[in-house]
Length: 140
Image (cartoon, rainbow, N blue to C red; front, side):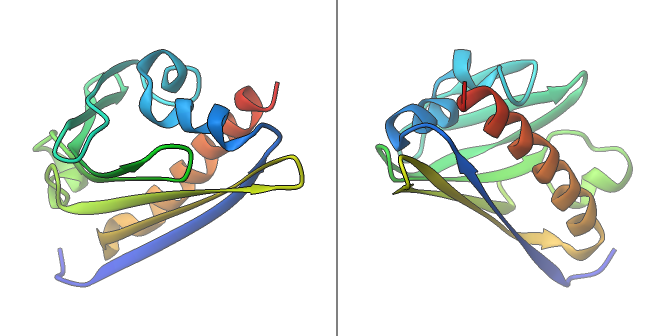
């Protein structure tokens, strides 16, 4: 384990307006369509962010910023104390998602910073996968 950190960035176009895409970031019933098996969301600054991504793998933190239809930022880390995920405890990293209306849809930009270097690659791959899921289900 090192003290070095990574930042990953992803960008997708969703064929739906920002008002619709925003719901997939802050409402449990919508979020369940693209990421996670259970959700505890309090989308307000200081509110709880807790998502069981897969059985026993729980990401948690708190919302830092919630600007309806434009931006969501929350801290992120893993409740698991085993294996490599222990290097990223709850609240240690930061996920920022910006939404911009474009061409009748939404340009979504995700930035995940303060990731331990050894976890940057796997988080990058997983975000690419889950954002693809979001793109697919929100564009219907």
